[in-house]
Amino acid sequence: MFLTIGWVLFYLVMPGIVLYAASRVAFLDTIGSVVICYGIGLLLGNIGVLPDDFTGTQELLTTVTVPLALPLVFFSMDLKGWRRQAPTVVKAFFSALVATVAASLVLFFIFSPVVGEDAWKVGGMLIGVYTGGTPNMAAIGSALEIGSSRYIAVNSADVVVGAVLLFLLLSVLPRIFRFILSPYQAGGSVAAGERGAIGRERRFSPYFVRRTARELRSLLAAFGLALLIFGMGGGLSLIVPAGYSSMVAILVITTLGVAASFVPAVRRIPMTFQLGHYLLLVFSLVVSSMADVRQLTETAPVMIAYIAVLLLLTLLLHTLLSKLLGVDRDTHIITATALIYSPPFVPVIAASLRNREVVMAGMVTGIAGWVIGNYLGIGFGYLLRLLGGV
Image 1 (cartoon, rainbow, N blue to C red):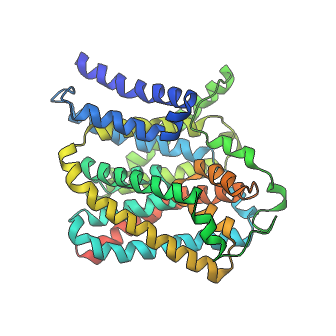
Image 2: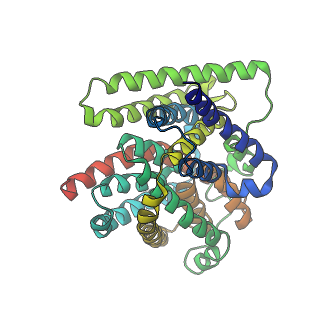
Image 3: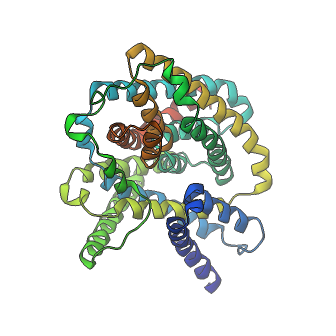
């Protein structure tokens, strides 16, 4: 009993320590708090220190953290900003979605014999992560009830391949796209009132900053609202067939979380994103500690090949569509970054492009990807199950 409580407290406290360390040490910030938590979890789960009867507690924590995190992440979003973006950004965004879905559909039939019976779940997760980032992958994995070892294999492969692609986006790819796509026209991809908005990326910083007691009370109220939304999603999931309960819960929670973001009083509450991100770190730590490294070594190489080919094909199709639709180089790159990596990476790529104006375009497309990703990933997963005859 006391040992279980001690490990639960460890799961809750360690992500906070990781966040604090990453905010203070540039090297740890470069690695990323998610990767660090996964590493700690993998170590814990495979050195024999966890209690033998701890699986039920771990499953409870993974079941609770993602549905609680999603509303908090969505509360901070200003979706009205989407309407202020120029048509070029809209074309880049939807061409990226089309490219991701088309590439995923083709590769599902190629890799499903190797991946096995979970191939449709993996396909849905990959659609989600490449339209909205890791929060969508976690949510879709939970909705489709994928096993922890398979989830870790997909996420680990995504980290490896994503790191290589990020390096290419920061180095050679912009030079290659210069010969394929038109140059960026100042003010052409971002509404005039949004130029120079690079300071807004701070709302997506994963780190907490000191706040007043009043603001902390507001954050506590936001957490209470997230609990209410979590309860409503869980309650509605109880009245549907068992095989669809997780899917219904995630979609209801996503919808209510997005709806709450349209309320100015909710949207202005500080640090809701950071609190949601912290809960996702708890999930990352717990789920990685449930993974068997021996099984991971058998499945991760396949996932690395799958994801590498998927990202390559997606980028090729996205570039072709951007060329046909007249999307400029910088908007193309920032849109791809926002969807593949999520908004926190947008300022990094914008700085490498030396273009402050595309920051808001990247932020808004990344936010839209967060919202669409859960619906698209879950729907696509069930479509793949139907097409695959599972």
